[in-house]
Length: 283
Ligand SMILES: [Zn+2]
Image (cartoon, rainbow, N blue to C red):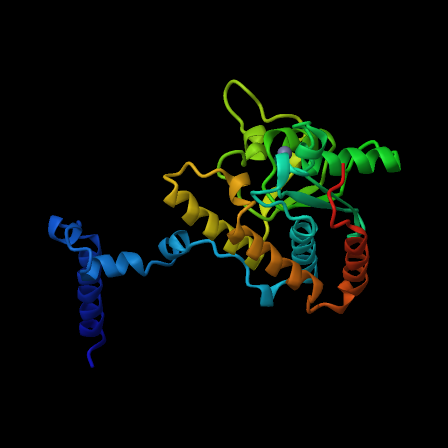
């Protein structure tokens, strides 16, 4: 074949491709979401990445650290379920069905606490407040640097404020609180008028990557929708739907199948501490 003719053909073809790709999108293209142009946009990799929903990490793909997160999140539910407060519990009973566990910098669980607003007639007695103040008083620990708190419900503003002031390393929660939650994010909020609250930037507060947390969030979201968006989360947490989820979480905690043998000591220590948690209300 004549090489000059060959090059000419190539140039002609290239200019056709360039012109085609430079053509403006016509209104017909825009109004045709199922057409070829829409398909081309949809298949662009960057668009796909942006549209992908953030899924909770599968339990089967977790790392050893994620497995410990699972165990301690389940333990927080189990601690609460051990003294479950129903709607008929007299005069508020112990308090709300909310509790938490504290894990030290070595990854070992060292303390637990539950909400005792009712038993103490004192609205400051949230699980996280009690967890921090009791442990720090007992151990004479000035702060909780590098510690992790696993709490059954997303922390409120009071607890988040204390976590920030005590330099807690990380917080993992077992249920999203649509009303009182995102307190940490609000403390971290940066605006022209206010800088993020000191120390707040160092405290990640994250939903547990745990199947139970996903189920609880889904069930409460559905209930909240049925209630016209005005559901009371602590009332729901006294109901039979929540009780069943917490009962299942307790069974999962007690029969946990370790994928990482290196977590055996931590898991056994967690079971040992859980055994000491009373099934009666504390004060
Ligand atoms: Zn609180």
